[in-house]
Length: 336
Image (tube, rainbow, N blue to C red; front, side, top):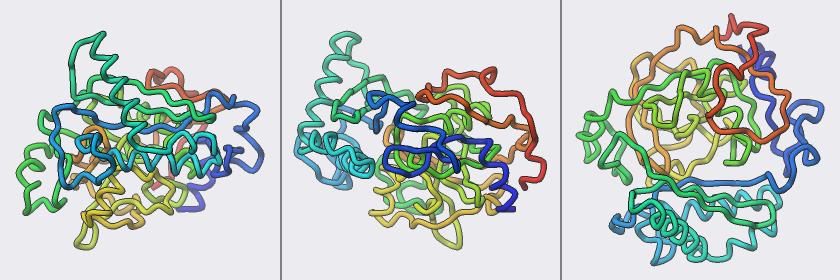
């Protein structure tokens, strides 16, 4: 099966590899610095900001002003580490103190509220450009949960403080497996401007907006689950909760790091053939917190169109429709 998947995965995701500036993911260069303008390259992180949130002792300390901002320390570290991994030393220099970045965040929220009125909590996206420029965008946080579970003390469903909330939310979110494997790259390991693999996975899964109560799991050429399109997944395996290992090529999310640091789970390679119809999966991200979902097998999984990108432009958001997908030139008949 792995050899067969490897034969097909090049059609799924003409992404980039893990070289510093993103040289082509195939044997020959596909995506180069010359074709992607430096000013269009960026790292980003999305976080939850709620001015009314109370400080929580489970929130890693960063700076006094950011005590109530959800996992802000990990967001700061993510941007700084990501800039270092790409050799963006000017960008690293712009991230000297967490308080400076947090002040930019608060200022952006204040400007938003002056125009639209207070509508918190908010989803705040921080972009870090190649030369160190920082852009902050603000939008209302849209969630089906009025009281998000931000700091669970356990992921166990049969005991602990999270039990009641987990079962109340159990059937809201559904999770499916992507139709085709995704190539491991710098852009799957860190959050960058290149989002095509996630956009096409969501389109293939029939997810129309980020408010849909549905998630899709991406997997690599070896049949290992990488992560979700906008969440970190957690699976119950061999008596404990695990999250996909870094070696599988997925994004090392902020909530993932927190969950591992708090010993709620451990990293482990999770194969797609271990997924069970109807099993409960935890999902998390730094905007919605932690919530449970149910895995649903996709009967149409082998009928999804292949993705062969010939574009070198930055990935757009999920505004792309299924009309943008190329017609299928082969079927993944023997994937499972």
